[in-house]
Image 1 (spheres, rainbow, N blue to C red):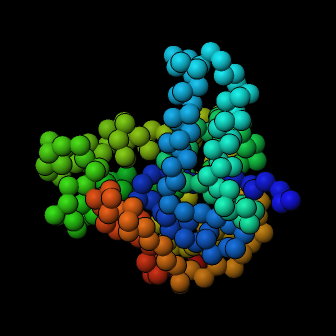
Image 2 (cartoon, rainbow, N blue to C red):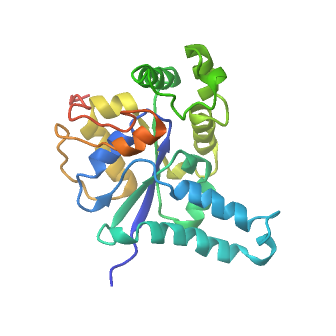
Length: 244
């Protein structure tokens, strides 16, 4: 019987290289990584049903909550039993470090970051590239009408960029910051080997020789359902390999 996989987590800001990082990690046959998974949302839903104020909160103790939440990971990734290391991606993980460290004491979280102005610019460019689609990033015309309303909406504390930004700050300044590695988008694209060697050292895994000139990742069905074509597309020339 194979041992349980080691879990690590990818989080941080949108449009900041998390999908690119996953595409790189996927080249290592020991690893599984990908775009945002539903585990983070399932985690929040289960915790809500177990907590004070719910019908079952009083009969589900802390140890049972741990087993239920840990079981989400084991069940969701049951078909990846051949992968010793699994990276789950979700922007919520930066706000869940205390729980993650309790469930997975050896786990590390890699937070992909980028200048917030460029994050908003990247999202705006994607929006403009799909002018015949009302993306689900916005709830109504008041939010999507102009570039100003779109940026203001995305930057709100409970929206795509604003939430990720505040969650990142919580992780960075919190008690579990030692389990957090910040990966800058520009460095990842310009000096991928240097950054990846740092990642491998941080998660205590042996180095794997990656081919940074042949990277590819795409999730067209997911992106189309969201109304943002190309959101998770990584092109083979996503990195410009240089030594810094």
